[in-house]
Structure formats: structure tokens, C-alpha cells
Length: 512
Image (tube, rainbow, N blue to C red):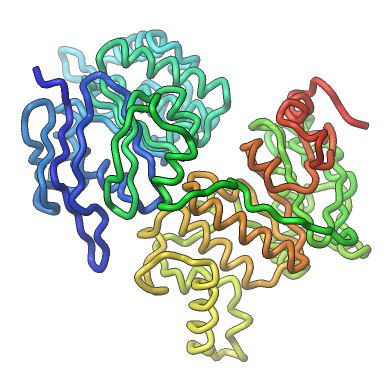
């Protein structure tokens, strides 16, 4: 038996005006965990779609040998890929929310009785056995819509493992998981490796490669840079291979001198719409200064997103507390109120809340800013195109043209489009909720530089992030939340450490 379960030989995949993969070749050993590293748009996702049959064999050149045979998927290949034992866990959760965990796991493969009806007893018995085998603490009969995002991700993984899997491909599997859930996933992957199942692991969290992978293949601009053993490489070397240059500083150094407070929020509270006795945000007060980056840290469910959403008017009259901008109390009951008061928000979920992915870059940037291009009922299309194109260039959005559909862009470039439309509104206060989630180190660095530039121009920035190195690397002050309350606001000086932030985030300590 060949030691390689996958052999990719001289594969090239082209789209109109773009070469997504250019003559790539590398091998994946049987039973190993093989990492794929690279910036967004480097070609990783395109390769996954070839391996899973989304792109049939007649749409690319080159050869893929799988388990000793050439892959030759036709246009009905999705089921064929799963039948051959290739399963993909995508970053987007492909589940039916109103179905139960068991129904989702065995959707399309339900066991039947002798009379042809669904054998519900067996379906749920098999679900319980599968969840127990992989130590997944998920209620097997619960509706998926009632589960948190982390547990939904585990359901997707369980669904993949319920097949006769030989190769499991995981695309950004931990982007929405808590630390405890990440630990559970790592235990699952260790078990799969022990059982001889091959895993292909894609992530922008480079530390995870060193935690779980045996080998890493690095992509850049649609080409394979190299395939190396994980134990023989460093984080800095991976970054250098990914971006084609040395990045000595992960966070661009900048000396900021914040001015007076631009916004002061006092006693902000938000009741839980489902549980009136519970508060999503409970009596939080803070300020943000001109030219400052205020980081907001906390564990998942701590109320970080709810706090910034309340500032942006999402909860309307349900929000309690006062907001003052430049010393004057303002009424913010909607997103339009917030924008009119100089506040812009880059939301946590860019695809759901920040973009119209079926529309062009031009339309996504211009739609929230149409008042800049209209006079009466007339739209100045020339000005609209010129201004939006200049903003796209300013943020270095990589695309064939500004008329490109946003859905065709990489995650990092989609995030830049969201930033572009917010910046075009000339905000005094810019809220960034997980601004670098799911994007590569090169795009992250560009966004950090942009944040520094905006702060240097006097914009007050509020940044929510789950990544403590990012919080420490970019913030002037750090507000820490735990269970809806602010447990402390600390200056980012020599006293600001990951350990101190986690102590506040877990409610172990509270600063008065």
C-alpha cells in the first residue's frame, strides 16, 4: 500500500482573469495531519473544492491520485466524494437549524425500517454512540438552532465523522470555538490520527499547526512554496513563506497620543430578549478618546458584541444608559442614528451583517454612502465610481475590477470592502468587532496599519477581539468583560499581560 493517500501532480485551475492554482504538486501521507498555510486567495480553498468534487475533473488540468486511483469526479461528484471517504468541514456551518442534532448528522442517510419509514430509534441510538465515541457533549435530540455556534461546529464535525471517512478536511474549524471546544477538537484529531484517518487542516491560527499537525504545505499566490515537517519550521518562517517577505513585527509599531474623550458611555445595560431577568450587558461605563484604540476583551458570551451593538443602536429603546459624544448626550435608537452621529461598525459576521455578497464591490461601498453621490433623485455615477474606486485602491482590495462580485473575493479582501464602506462615511468613532477573524497574517498586518493610520487622523477606535496577542499588540487601553459586566479597564503598559486579562475575563478578579 502506498504511503501517500493523496498525490497532487501539476494541478492548475483558472478562472476568468485569475489563475487560482498554478502547477501545484505535493503529497499527503496516509494517517497524518497535514496543514495547509497561506494567505486568503493563495489557493487553499480552490484545492479543497477540487478534492471534494465541487470543481469536476474537466475544469482543471493536472492529476490527483487518491488511495491509488486517479480522482475523476464528474458534475455529480459531491456525493461521490463522500462515498469515496472524503469529507469536508467548512467554515460556514451547513446545517438545517430547525432539525435536531441527530437529523442533521444523518440527513440523506436516515436508517429505515422494513416498511420503509425512518427508524428514529436507530437514528438517535447511532447519534448517541457517535457523540459518545468522540466525547462530544451535545444533546442528540436538541434542535440545532438552540445550540451555540461552537456546538453547531461540533455537529458539523460529527456529521463528517459519521461517514466512512478516510480523509477529513477541516477549513478554519476553530474560528468560532471556545478554548475548551478547541481542546476537544484536538483530542478528536489525535484519536483520528491514531485510527489511521488522514486530516487536512487549514487555519490562520498558526499556533494550531504546531499543536496538531505533522506536516505543513505553504501556499502563496496559487503556488506551493514548500512542504515541510512541522517540527523543522518556526512561526516566523511560515509567515515569511506565506507573504514572501520577512515580518519582524506582527503588529506595526506606532506611538499614539490620544486626545480628549470623543464618546462617553454611562450605565449601558441590555436585557436579554428571551430572559427578562437576565442582562446581556449590565451597567457598563467607559470612554474612548480621539486617536485612541480601545480594545475590548473577554470570553465568548461575555457581552462584548452586545455592548458595541448597543452603542450602535441595535437594541433601540431596550438599551439603558446614556451616550455622550463630545460632551453632548445623543439619542441612538438605530444604526442610522449611530451613523448620523459619526459612529460606524464593522460587524463580527461580515457576510451576514456587513456585506451583500451577491453585489459588486462598487455597490457594497456606495450603498450606505449614497447621500454623497446624489442630488435630489439624481445619482452622479461618475463620482460614485471614482470615489469608490479610490477607496478600494486606498485599502488595497485585490480584485480584477471594482465591478467584481464580493462573493468571489478572499476573506481578507471582503473585510477590506466592509472597512471601505465604513471609512467612506468619515466616522469619528469606528467600532471593529473581530476585525481580523478568518483572515491571513498578511491581510491582518494591512488592517493593523490601516487602524494605526485612522487613529493617527484622530478617529476613535473600539476593537473587540478574541485574540489576546492582538488586543495587547494594538490597544492603548483594554476593557475586560465577564458575564455582561466590565471587570476592569487597564492601560496597555508593562502591567498589561495575557494572564492579567484572563484573570479579569474569568471573573477571578475585578478592578475597581
